[in-house]
Amino acid sequence: MLSEVPRELRTPASRSRRVTTTVATGGSSRHEMVRLAAEGQPLPSPVEAYFEVANRCNSKCATCPLTFSPQENAKQLSLEEFKMLVDQLPDLRRAVMQGIGEPLLNRELAQMIRHLKQRGVYVVFNTNAALLTRRRQVELIESGLDELRVSIDGSTPETYLKVRGIPAFERVVANVAEMVRTQRELGSSTPRLSLWVTGMRQNLPELPGVIDLAARIGVEEVYLQRMVFGFMARVEKTLARADESIYDRGYRAQAEAFIDEAERRANAHGVRFRGADALSPRESIVDRPPMDEPWRACSRPLRLAYVTAQGTALPCCIAPFTDAPYESITLGNYLRDSVQAVWTGEAYRAFRERLYSSDPPAACRNCGLAWSL
Image (cartoon, rainbow, N blue to C red):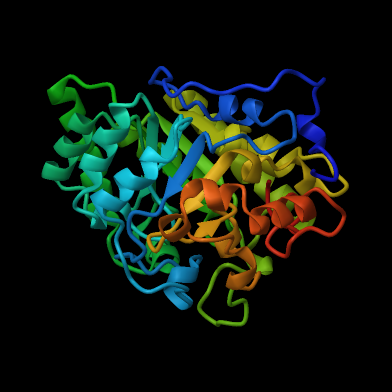
């Protein structure tokens, strides 16, 4: 029994429900995923899953633990392993094909997506797009992928190199522009394309330029997302530090000015400008009200499974980026122990119990305080 229902999820008691496996494509079903967990109890089976299809990367991002302290041996999730996991997720509605690593490194990715689409699952992933060749573009379009998010983190080659660690800005922009043309040639409205910026003081001044870039190459959406910091904080080259955070009252005026200008350009270009988790950038960064114990509002451990390439069960996609010891966020192994054994196991139960208390797990204690929830 959980000690307290998440504050933002409290609803009158309602009858127990089982969810169906099919949802319409064309719009993310994440809001529905959150609603399903509104009773404050873990769902019988996850309705959303992160599949880390590859745990190595061809970028060297200064904000990523993989660059400085990889926690698991290099591996790619095989198609056979993937299907075995999916077969154990009868209620799956939404799949995110990434963890810490570049999904396009896995050559079986398109087959995995096609397998999910045969079940009516909404499928999305983030990529650095350095490997988004014409052949991979066609594969992804034909697989039925719903949404493709491209991490760009700047509007100039110089900032891109500082943040993402490789001199690939021009190649990435060219690949994404070609993806737009390929979709038009094939007459496909999917996947929905967007550019993503991990906001930090190093790159926020270029946010308006990212809006301009999106408009120039035909991408209709730009997202500003949280930066999570804490891992390897003493490493000199990491940008995942508190002094780079834009989620800070002392930086609010500067952040508001850059966001204002980005909003103005987005309106002028007809580009949709959004924040993570369906909030506007302003709501996420500037207008956020103070909350006591904001981590209690999180529903991820009630509805979502995160599986690494090695099969490790983690509570969410944020936890590996925090300063929490890795062993404190490992909740079992889906490949070894089965999905149901992990999901209903003692480690997960204890993690949920602490999350909805005044003494949350180390990975959760800064959610909603040092970065957006």
